Image (cartoon, rainbow, N blue to C red; front, side):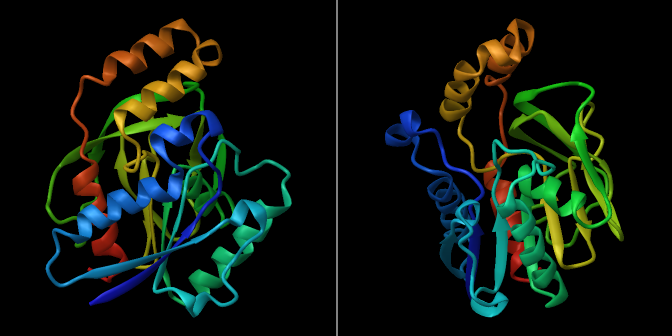
Length: 241
């Protein structure tokens, strides 16, 4: 099976970090190509659309599925491209094409479709966060009752969109992932991040995070993460597993 995935890029890695870590589409390419190499019956093609620069596919049918990346912006910011992205996502959903939302993408798929995203009462969440699977899905292969991912967000989904079900939650994030039928799958965490990039990003934001949050986030990097499993889940979902 061949799968063409459109990466809807909503932000870029800071220029000072790009030589070492690359940009977000490259991070997702590493994640998804690694996962695809473990699936004998699947080949993938990734196409990047810079939606933060108002670059979109000329038709939903250009790809078999889509993935919305994270962003430093908030989904409620008054920026034209965010509204344009929401309009395109509505077309994707109407066409019954599958879409995955990561961090900002997770929040956008709630906020513009009957839910609500707002600043989290707990403030910033950074570093490794453990998440419980509360509604196992058929595409969650290999199965596990929980997973840990790197996080970097100050907003959270406060109300689910219409028809959504929470699939994952953590102590600090009541909605860490949701599905809408078989069309939408989201996660608040970042399976594409590695720990070196997370550490660099926290270091850049140390004064913004505050000493306690920064220290806790850096200490958490000693914990195991499960990006490889989540990469497989994403591909299983997009191919209809």
